[in-house]
Length: 500
Image (cartoon, rainbow, N blue to C red; front, top):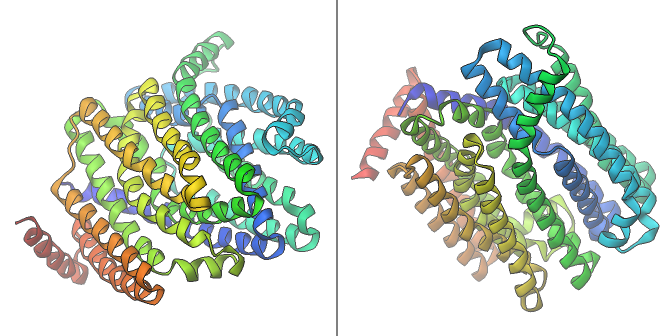
């Protein structure tokens, strides 16, 4: 395995991960204020609003985010600056039109959305304002696709940090002064900040190379991107609709309080993994796209990314699994007790999620839209069906067990597709680290069932141990010199011993 390749992965993970840490902290502050001021019902409504914006933006964008990144990365690798310039123009004009159409259609449909999804006609005016968030989300997605395809990792990190801080500060101010009436402002300020900062950094790029393309040429480029993007739009739509269906099931059957419990655990699970998974879309995806036809290199890259992701997430995951009751009380309040069990089940599922994500990008890099739709639909259908079947027995905790079940089905499925597509196999290092992490997580879960304090002690002990191993292993991968190099050699000897 290439030390330089590992250094590239670690560098991008450090840059994007550092930005995500700041976003996580600012997002946790915003969640804490919302939980204290609005309670579980307010947190649940905020989750529904965000889900509506994300779902509508996913439809309106026609998959341009994923395809834009792929096309720019491929054009840069194969066609040079002229090809990149043509793709940039098509992405800009196509996304601008889609953003405007998406916002207008959502605004016109706001009354129907309110009746169908929220079953509360009094919220129609608030839902109509969410159309602004849809327009801004589609437009900022185009900016991110361009910067990601050109591997402007630093710019993306600065946008993420700036948007996260602005969103949190302004969102907290809105909730603090306006209470429940500030909820809408809290939702909309995040996409607005992302769009403004994205525009600033995109404007700093050199103008697209080559002569100005004629309308017909841009239309042809856009049709190609739309042809590739529509399948990915459908897969994204399926995921968003599945999450929306899950929230609707919980709210309709168990009420707004239960929905808030689910949203609390869901937000933590989605937030803490952001520092690992965010780097995949920013650096790993365009690099994989450039080498996807070289199967041996692609397999090596997937294994390297999976190993780094497991190493980076393991200490945090194990610590959170042991400290789940205290994490929930710290980030929310004592009213969110049922979220503890939901979070624990989700953390077990996150191990499988981290292993599956690098494999899912194989389909994106190949442009295998129909297969991607199939795998994503199967996974989210398992999630929704699991909630529907288990909720009468387990209550809101069914959302956590269904999350684990989703990745029990999804991981083998994407592995089989990657095996068939590029001849993928997990390396021995990945299999060993995943197995040890699973055993450690199950051990913490069992000890937590016996005693919360025993679970906390076990979780912290194993988190510290895996943190030390992560330091040794990552230092080995990067081939660091000097004192770090001596640490690396210790890690290498331990790694060789594990492989015997």
